Length: 391
Image 1 (cartoon, rainbow, N blue to C red):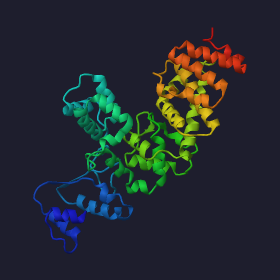
Image 2: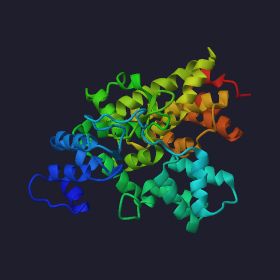
Image 3: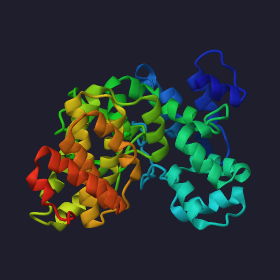
């Protein structure tokens, strides 16, 4: 940092460079502004942070010199009397500004719903909006959405620096000293990458994660802006970061298992809805629907023991029934695609019957319903044979 400053101002670097820089800046006539961009580079390393903050403090004491610092994350260097009110960390664009930015590059789009769908992939992060718009301008919206389902953030990572390569920008934050000093912070981030709805702060301490520095890890993620606290007080991760982490740093079984247990406990609450309807339960599950579906999709991709498979499938069936009863949200057909084949491999006739019955309700298909009834008859399940829907 000293070398760069001295070199920029054309100063002699022999002797005490700090004094030479301070003397030069103090001699300038009139007000001046010194902008230190990418300041986390010299400041983040714990072994040099104190010296960097000392230098920053001396710069701030120079009369008529105004200091502007930009850096990744939500922290600000200490030992400085920053002007008040403090500037808040930059947020994502609002949807109107994101559209304006996107259309400034693409020019126009015939279908506004396509534009909203594309911006949903970016979470209105300026870099992601810009890169996605550039690709859309020559590939078209349909092609981009199709590629995203296969490539996610890697399709926005063809550039060579953090200004043109989204993956590289995220990787810089992940490899920062604030993150590497807490190895479990990346594990916590991998868990949050499966939770598009975020998670209440208190829940993190309740789901028995396999490390005891959860609070420190959470703080590190927020300080580096890899996660943030939403207005609903949930810890969340922006879509581009979530997609990158989900692909490059998926959660280990030790992390995923307690999360899965928490999510399944939410789904099991829906089982009592027919006996005791509750608007509170509908709201709670609605607030977590994205989390539930994402975790269930992940669980169906992981090769667990037969008993864990059965539990996952039972949860899919319970959630599907609940969604049909409450019209909670458009049902994710990704969850039920291939579900029947999976269930048949478990050779559990009752479970096959439940799956067929649910598929019949979702797709309004009498053929599924008839096959379900036959399964229940074959195993002597009188209770299931009396379910509404069987004539």
